[in-house]
Length: 123
Length: 108
Image (tube, rainbow over all chains, first blue to last red):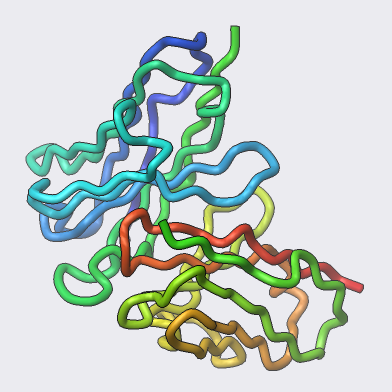
């Protein structure tokens, strides 16, 4: 069974940093693109970042550029999201999601999602 | 970035009814790289439709997607009680891979 388990969320003061992790199992992690999506309380989905299978390509939302870094360790089957200079508006549930296919048109389509980890930025 | 506008924001319907949700892009979505997700309260989103019209695994055939260019629709032919949820479209043709703001289907 394909599973994604996020961790690393918590309460952080504005200006702080956090690294979220997503542990993957049940599929060949190194063959698939991965994404991070967040959802502020009571709000809609916001795509944050994506990374290719080999880490060669990374893509970011405009709101993430400069403060957020997506990375992966294929030897550990783990995806990461580093968030620096945290702001109150970064408060959200953060989901990792697996790309649908190892190549082709659906490479970045998100077919399996984790249950999320909660980040709260507050003083 | 491509802005996706979903309409309507909220729909109140009864089980058994047919519904069509709209997703309009601020510019053409390349190669119909458009997906639809369903999200229920307290749950992660679930992939329904990809490539504008292909159903994901285990998605009932009452769900269908269509459209191209900048106009896309999700149709549910006959609403079941479990279909009342929030639906999001997303384009993945051009980074950033933006979402629409969502359409909430609620029981009338």
